[in-house]
Image: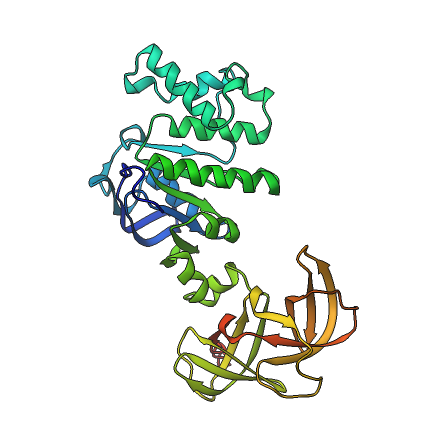
Length: 376
């Protein structure tokens, strides 16, 4: 992220011990994080994880039951204190665009400037400039129903940015679009937001979107913030198996730890031994789960079927899919299955193959203790 093109004008966002309840359900459990001015934070989690509640709390749409939110050094939310959304110097881009259907594209974008004190000429010039930026200057007199979904989302983005708010909030803005358009708009969102200097908070359930956009990622699970870090750390050292699974695994192996040195453990999985990076403490003799990142495996000719070399599995092809760069295979390895096993050529279903594993992309966690049986 460049710092020499424009001084950041974004809010410093501070959330401390935030709690939000709906009746007996606690949607946010003591959430806390800090986002520097101009940073792009992505909140990642499945449906029901609390990410929508959190972004709506930042916007001032929801009131916290406990904890505090500070925006640009100003207290925005606390018990007994609630700063109205229009006083938070922010704008929000919604999943369903939220455009005024009776207003033209130009009027929709200009609406965000009404309370900013611009004269008519300045307002017109600013609206034209931002529509030029998103490629819709020629559509200024059209109405939302005359636009495609991607064009409507560009209007929503232009409306959010035109008044230069200090905080931009994105509520899964690309989820209603097709894959190719999502990728193009993702780039536009990243570029326009960073050029504006605003701080951004973006929610999504799509891990590839999160890694592509974020300076920081916060992973939410059942209302708790389970990890908050740079994308590289989230991927290399996911704090929990949930974080690892949600950010992409191609298979899971279970076995017993037979060797452990520094941050590498060797795990006996049936007749094979695999090595991986230890994420949570394990000891020799412990049962462990080995999570396999998609980049960890490939079909190899280096070891013949029947060998017991570390990091080598033997199995049969269950399925194959063409991925452009080559082929991804699903391999049955005893009671386990490993997906996304790469090879430059397609293997036949049922074919016996050897899979090589890269320990750098294998993650070792202790197997959770089984529940204690209830006494009769």
